[in-house]
Each structure stands twice: as structure tokens, then as C-alpha cells.
Amino acid sequence: MQLPDWIKKHKEPRTDIRKIGNGFYKYEVAFVYSKTKKRTEKKTIRLLGKITEKDGFIPSSKDALRRISEELPKVDIKTFGLYHLFSDLMKEEIASLKKAFGDEQSERLLSFAMMRWAYQTPIKRATYYHSHDFCSQYWATKNMSDKTVSLNLKWFGENREKTVGWMKSLLSDVPENEQNFVLMDSTHAVSVSENLSVNAKGYNPDFDFDKQIRLMYLFSAQMKQPVYYRLINGNITDVKSMTLCVKEMNVKDKVVFIADKGFFSAENVAMMEEEIEIPKEKNTAQKTKKKKTEPEKPLEQTVYESYRQRGEIETMFDSFKNYLDADVSYMQNRYVLEGWLFANFIAMIAYYKLYVRLRQAEILSKHSPKDIIEQSKAIHQIKIRNLWYRTEITEKTQRLFAKIGIDYLK
Figure 1: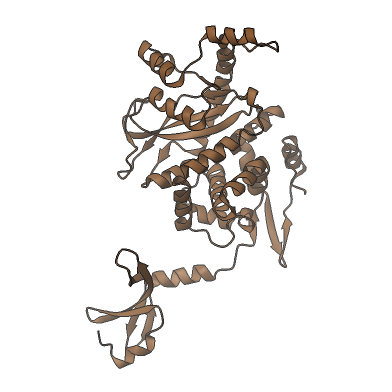
Figure 2: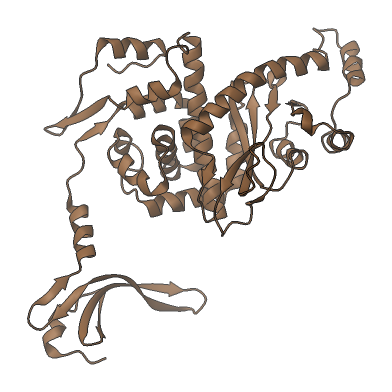
């Protein structure tokens, strides 16, 4: 299209001026190479504004707001307590994540996981919380947007084998002969998405027959935390999904599966014995005779001790689901959902670690994990002449956090 001479002065690199009706409009464009067409194509990015002969270029209101937001000074008072608490609880996991996945991908994931843990934030609010938290000084310092968060989650969702490898690495500090797992019942999560293939109508204890997904978790009895999860179609039963979970983690000789009484049937037991090779009491006794060292625990004793721990794990698990609001998902992409679940899994580990510290300090009767997280939000850093300073903390708060090994005066 031939442009009038008066409008040509508004033409700039990476822009395009188009006549629509009786008006002229300026757009930001980019040139992208198409692999399928094997040529460079012009792609429209956004509307920049309108051009008239009388008034010249008139920026669009949306683009003007975008430019103002980009020019705003960086926040100079940030929440510090959350980052300090989360990074202390997750010290080993943070190091192993960076080793397995690299700094950039790990830091974006950690930031979102921490925001899920602290604020139960959806993806679209993660950028705000990140910019107002001190973690932005260490994690994903260059750019954090809802788009980059979604792409990050998608990346992890597409790399299931690597994430499982990382989950296996969580067990490296537990002696091989002490790795005792409790395979919990799967839990359901309602999914209202119309674009997922894994959500389907299925049974759940709430008799809610909306579409759902199912999640299976492995918990370590020694570590008192989850060490594995897997996303399962909403209409698949536990016994079918359990087989792949055990195979994926390669722990078939270390799992005690404790099911509700409704699960028990001759058919289910036969399927489990065939698929997972459940050890018999007779076989356990034969192994014991061959060893001169301390004999193995009888299978009925192992089951009983695991069952006792299940109650505590279920209590924590229910509290975590209610607190994190992780039982409802609006994800529209399978791989973003997988990454979102991985971020929630990391948040879950942090929640359990905090729970264990409170229990060890014998203050669970007075303070829940949620209480501690909320109190940590009141601890800030403030920038004065380009230096960060800790805001005031009461002695009562200092004593409380000292009981669980957190020092905010460092």
C-alpha cells in the first residue's frame, strides 16, 4: 500500500503502518523464520497507536500503560522472611535442582513453587509476588512474567524423565537398607479444563463426578516427606496406576501399599501380586534363615509400623491440600499442568520440612506451618542508598524462629 507523504516520517524499523477504514494505525512487528515455509515471515506483535495528519502519532492507551509499567523503578522494600525460610528449609533440594536442571530453569521453578507455598498464587499473579520478594535478588533476576512462568512449567512438564531422576536423587542420603516407602492412596483434583486429555469423570470419596485428575504419591517413612508423584487419568483405578509408579521409581522391594478396605478384593490382590511381585511371609522367613546378621522384620510388623505412620502423613497431606488449594486446577495444557504439579510437589516438600521442624521443637500445638509462613511475611528488607537493611524484628518473633533453626539476624 502506498502511504501518504505526511505519514512516512512515522515509519520506524520493526513497525508497520496500515490503513484500516479511514484511519492509519501503527503496529510493532517482528520477522520470524518459518521452518515449514522455509522463509522469513512478518509477525504482528502489538498495536502501538493511531496516526492522524493533524495530531501525528497518538499512542494506544494499553501500550502507554505497558511503557509506564516498564519504566517504573524497581521495588525497594521487599519481603525477606519468606525467601530466608524457604531457602533454609530447601537448601539441599535447591542445590540438587540447579545441578540437575541448570540455574535459569531451576530459579524460575523455585520462585513459582515458593509463591505457591506462601500465597497459593495462580500463574498470572506470580510476577507481582516475585518482584516484591527478596528472592528476585537471587532467582530469575532478569525477567519474570506469566508467559515465562508458563513456558518454564511446560519445559519441566516435557522432561518427565529428568524430573523423576531428580526425585530419585532425594533418596541418596537414606541408606539402601533403610528406604521404606509408604505408597499412599491416590488423591483426586477437580479439573474444569476442556483441553486436557487426562481429566475424566471418575470415582472419588466426595461423590463429586466432575472431571478430575488423579495424583499418586510416594512418601518416605524415614524422611517424613513425599519423594515422588505422578499424574494419572481421572478414571484410572489405583491398582492399575500403582504398577507404573513403582516401576518408574524402581522401588518394588521397598514399598508398603496401604489401601482403604473398599480396595480389597481377590481380583485386586491377584493383580498386585502379578504386577509388582508382592513378597510372601514364607519368602521373608526363608531369607531370614540365610542371614547370620540381625534378622529382617516380619512382613506383618513392617505393614503395622507403616500403617501407624500413614495417619500422620494423611493429616499433613490433607492440611497441605487445603492450605495450598492444590485440589482445583484450570490448566489448559497437559505439559504446563505437569510442570505446575512439579512446582506444587516442591512446595509440598517445603511444607513437610517445616511441619517436621515444628514437631521436633514441640510447638505444633501452638503453631501450624501456615502460622509460621504468615509470620515470615512480616519480615522485610529495605533499600537505603543502594544498600539493603533488615527491618525491625521483635524478640518474640526471633525466639519463635530460633526454635525451628531460623536466624533472621544473620
